[in-house]
Image 1: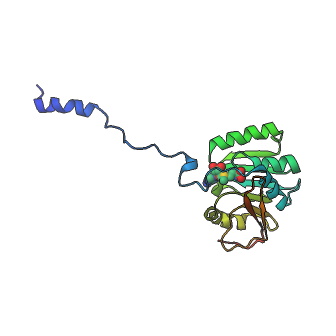
Image 2 (image 1 turned 120 degrees about the horizontal axis):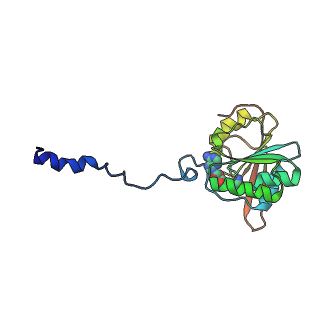
Image 3 (image 1 turned 180 degrees about the vertical axis):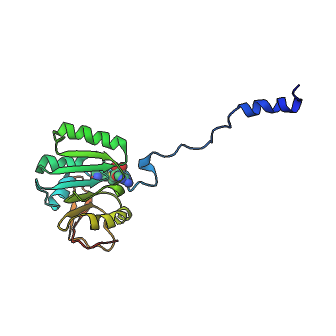
Length: 192
Ligand SMILES: C[S@@+](CC[C@H](N)C(=O)[O-])C[C@H]1O[C@@H](n2cnc3c(N)ncnc32)[C@H](O)[C@@H]1O
């Protein structure tokens, strides 16, 4: 015969402990790995970024945090350049792929669901950024060591600490907003 105290314990041991309560973890693009929220660069500003970088057909343009892919798609469509866009938000990568197909540049561009901090930048000749100053600084050691001398970096709106840009372009966009673009020419000097 089982004793009464044992019988009372049985139902408790048959049930799994309740699942941990609390909010679900944020999606990757809203997590600590996020370098910036999604805010697309207006098309006229994209055009100006590519002009500042003097893109040609020979270039391979990497957009770190590519959003809907507009920068690399425009580089491919207007100049025939190759392009790689990287984003941590799967929705943005799906949009970028659809936009590349609609623009007829699938053969020139690819989009990767990946953290920009882990991307191999050796194949790039141009890198475009629209992140935040603190995020540009996180990428600076990679940008200054992985890119070949002569490669260009263009940042929409945000600087890169004490790395002085080669050129700065301030203008009023089509919607009346003042924008500043920064261009750096990579010189082979590591910048931690
Ligand atoms: C300000 S938006 C710029 C989008 C696009 N480059 C443009 O100029 O239109 C920043 C993008 O960076 C992406 N992002 C944020 N953190 C990232 C990370 N660690 N790696 C890759 N992409 C990231 C966001 O999902 C967002 O799409």
